[in-house]
Length: 107
Ligand SMILES: [Zn+2]
Image (tube, rainbow, N blue to C red; front, top):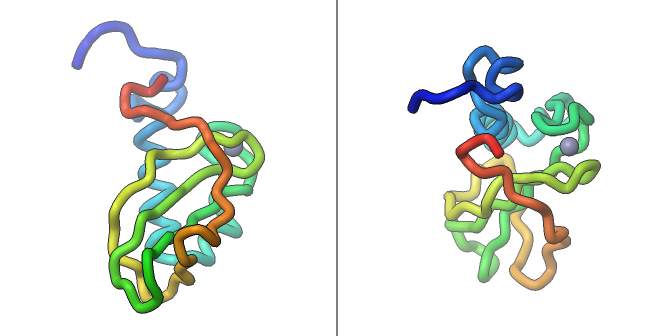
């Protein structure tokens, strides 16, 4: 670590925008209802989307996609277990846009 703080880090109390995306992801993962309340870490709109894509019905493992439908930023798809509260989507039927990835260096 070290070096100059970016404006984003300064605004977030030393936390990067990527950290705040991870926080939002974890909150949404635990409770999909949180998507109705969570503000996008990038643009501030309440427009976050979380989709679990599975290869076959009944799969406990999924690829998660997490993005904001307003600004089309999000974090990289992640292999994860499907939370019991979540609805999974069969691969090929998901409607995930080609969103831009927030990377963990905050840029
Ligand atoms: Zn946004």
